[in-house]
Length: 320
Image (tube, rainbow, N blue to C red; front, top):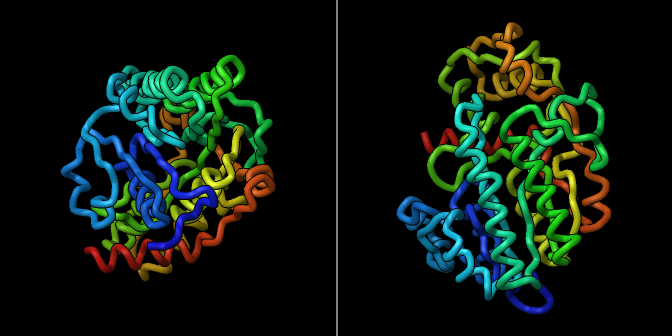
């Protein structure tokens, strides 16, 4: 293992949602630098075969279990909530409310009552901004938030919770408004837009892109995100930040790039006649202005999109 990342010695870190895509990659990085990682997940069997897991404290449980949170929040330096339920068709708003809002409220209550000195990091989303009509332009933290999906609404509500608990209870909090996170999987099949395109191209399946393909999107490679969170823990970073690559490509260019790299015979189609609900909730193009988080942590992304796609393609070829 590497030496501890932290000057004051190893940190005790509780990761709620630590068995998800981001959670596994992040837990692995923290274990690698000798942090004492506790993961709460409903399905421990799913991840128990991973080599690094034996060096974590793996707990079976739900973020909705307040008694479990109370018990394990007490002794932590950092509490990270990565839980996120993204209901693409907005068919399950109650489940979204429970996992995206009520869960975070329980995390905050457990911290304020049992470990108010702990640092807390919350995973927000680009969807909090909704449609902004600034295709290809940078958006900073001051961009008005008008979410147009249940997922975005609930994540914005959590950010309001964070501000409240910071102002009234003095909690040390940080929130990251994340763009599309992509990269190879740690186990199973990665479930993100880039991997979906790669899989279809390698199988020569047709590709369907919502809209006309002109919308500019910002994607962040998984290792760059985990490096950012490590930096934030190391420095005790507090505040609300945009997190992305700071660069963007049109959906049309992304689809064509992946098709070319895969040497695919897939056909690309654009779905411009969306249903009213799809049109309302779909995000338009924008690029995250990451100057604030770069300035406060010294972090910046290292993997450009082309290289990141190469790594996803190689992962699929090895694991098909």
